[in-house]
Image 1 (cartoon, rainbow, N blue to C red):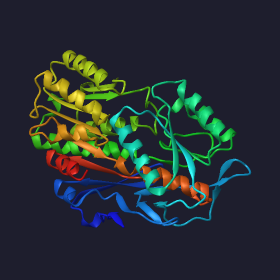
Image 2 (cartoon, helix red, strand yellow; image 1 turned 120 degrees about the horizontal axis):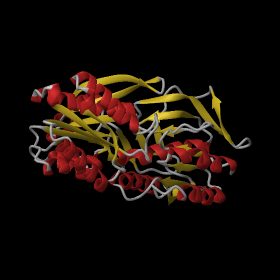
Image 3 (tube, one colour; image 1 turned 180 degrees about the vertical axis):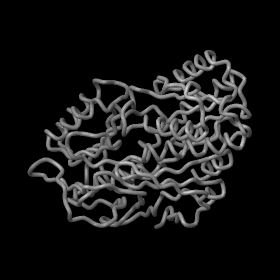
Length: 398
């Protein structure tokens, strides 16, 4: 029984496709319009109900990176292999009579993006018949991740899918699983001293998605560089190193600043907004109060939940869509609703299609347990969402 059919990217009205290098490979970024959204998002593949061994869900990727890895049970590590298929895609299968138990550890469970991703894992675990136990690293705790890792390692599951937002703890957490001879998948492709398969939509691609959308908006409005300022909200405790979400901000800052020729003293540093709306409101208000000369303002965060708070601060300071524009990513429903309003300051978002990430993690976990090779890294892809019509159309597909 077919539940949701594939949407072929060739059917989508694509305004532009970007190619760039990250992790020494080419990445794809698709920009979509409202017309494109009528057909649906092009990341989701077929979802079916089937018997044991049959495919129940598939998901294509924009790119993958070698070396390919194979779990060696005797040595308790991933080894490189040259024996692998030419192309890798996420193929989730119905488990057989022997079943499959695994552990998924979420970074946290309160943010909207986390709820969407966690819900996707629940959905596809049930659809495939996988017995999935979920644990929580409870970000921003710096002690809970090790406690959870030790607890999970003692359970000796066949595989662990690990989503940790604190890069500094990755060596300890990863080593805990490795010492217990438990293979784990790295949801955020954070560098470790040992080989681990990972997946994450490109941070540079995400920054370019936001940058190109903002550049178009600013050019359409005819803002003069001397009158235009940039407000940047980050969260160093979550991402402060290359290969993390901070790349979204640094890529955006460089592309927008250079293209629009903004004076460097009119671009804020990456401010510590702690990754929360409450902190973002305070930090944004403080910055806006300290810069009353900012005639036009570009506001940016990698999280659209934070961007909504920044947008509210701009409105409280008297800015409108005529002299302010904001951008943020992850395409969470509440943020898309804000974007959909007429004359919204919030104009640009990016979509990593989090509702399908359960297919990514669970299918890769199945491959590892079955002794099939997997790439070191797969990129699920990023699509830019620009303007209220595109935001409304994306909401309509959910």
